[in-house]
Image: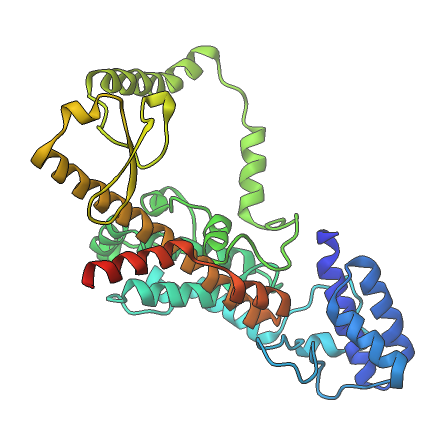
Length: 365
């Protein structure tokens, strides 16, 4: 059903244009088709209005008339043409100009539209805005896929402190960031554009389909990898050898290094079965059977301080992830007029943030 969502949205836009041109029969036909492809509240409400009084919205449709909440999605000017076919992928002149602008940028800072001394928050805000604008499921202009990839690469490099420092040091040697080749290998990101997008917006694009990147380099790269001839057994062994050495060295180091005296989680396989609580913040942690005899007095006090520091650090990381996911859901809901997503985002809990606030209050109280 999810793969039909784009087609259903297109049918709804055509039905809205038909209503604006006082063609309720045509509108009803496309709305019924949209419901068969992918049932939505938008189509249901419009069908009910047509059935009751032949309601005709003016100036573009609103998903839920008079209802407060996130901003509603407005159809593009190309979508309002009654003769447009549901299967067409239209785009506006502004979208095409924006894609061309990205391709003409000379460095990653220009792609994101920020200054060279931009802060991490400025990079995030710029990436969030541009990623939604150029995502291939939102922008069907030629070259939008490459522009989306360039935006993701720019943020992935500039948000990494070491890569950004290396990139800034290149000076005049920087190449065109929209191109690919051996000269750009030093600035290849560690994460793909789609994984970066999912990380920002809580698990994927609202109308994402299985054919994403069908006309982009990602699909071509996968096909190139499949078409590479298989190398001989010796060459494969040479490639795998560094990994084997790393595994062996890691195993030896684990044997030679003593295990930590505690764990924040219950791990019977490693011997952490005895639950304890720190004296100050009552943080739970687990130790081995001989812990009480081996660690006492000042050593115990220092260890519990370390336990609390680790626990608070984990809470901060989890709280940041929860806030990022909730913020991404709210942003998507407002941008696309998705009331269901907006309500879910409002109800989303952030337990790590709540626990962190409680601990902070107890420390300052």
